[in-house]
Image (cartoon, rainbow, N blue to C red; front, top):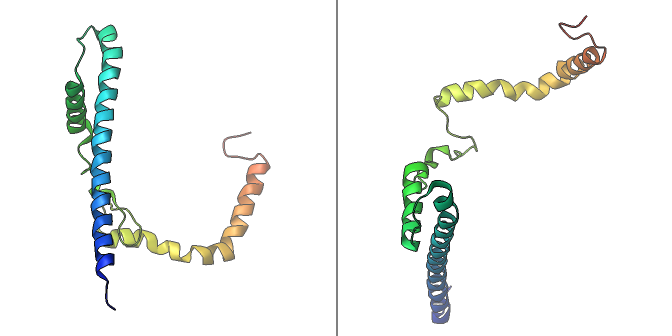
Length: 135
């Protein structure tokens, strides 16, 4: 299949447009964030704690300082992502984690043979008011 020159240009223009729009959105969010932090600080902090007012750039600096000290920059979630099977990473070795889950493969079989009867017996016991510790 032959790709026409017009289609190549369209793909390149679309990619470049997406990058420019993304960068523009980041810059716009940065300006809005700095403005928001500056105004919140200048509204609350001087009256509550008798501190001086801050400039726009000091508001941006406060944001980065807070992210650095408290939240990091998005690296804390790398080990929390699910693996191929949708499970979250744990401190257990893979064999231990699989061993903990092997019994659940027989849950449906157990429910069919004993679980439903045991559940209804439990519900009947609770409904009769003869819970442990009651007279």
